[in-house]
Image 1 (cartoon, rainbow, N blue to C red):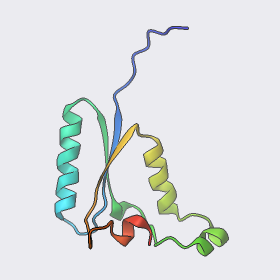
Image 2: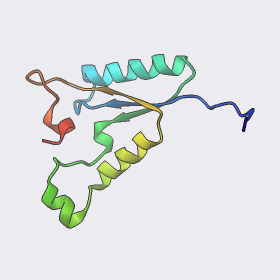
Image 3: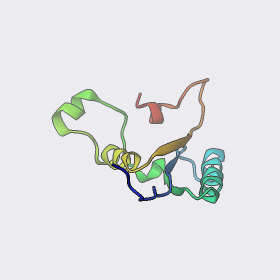
Length: 101
């Protein structure tokens, strides 16, 4: 079966994982969003502050389910074809807020 339907633009989530307003990572996420949009992609720029996400706790998940912020971020990721994460680096690793530890 063939179709003449043209695919839509690539949807890209650009996620700024730093909490500090005006951080270098927030600036890089914004720059990446602009550059990606120039290619014709549909860009969704998200910041960590938009999602109320406490550190992961399996006991809390078992008793209360996943936090609303985690579900909201998951929904945004699922709507995209690709994603970019701009994250601070602490001690040669991902910060606890992003890794959930």
